[in-house]
Length: 145
Image: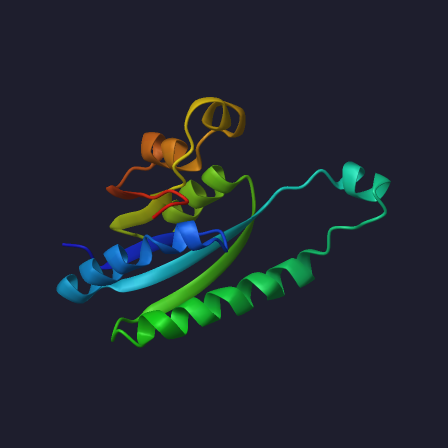
């Protein structure tokens, strides 16, 4: 049923809490896990004003190093795994990536925001759930988990 499982990560321990769920499904279904990290869009004018610059290649390398560490853990569970790094608006890039190759399941954590934090920051998980054209497994996590 599920042959390609996309797991979205953002370099946080909260996002990584979705991994055991994805690994369990992948082991049961003999599926490949694809790890995706989207480097968010930054306000480059604001960064220049602060005396910094956005270096996509450096950001991509940091993200790939992080994902390769996660990949080694997943493969240690006898699950095939690939990685991908993108740059853009996170939810939109996840949905765009899913449209490029047939994936059969998205697994991601919700970051447990509620109230004002959820309203101000929006929810990547909500947008992916709303617009993805495939099943989405949301793992609800919070700082205390």
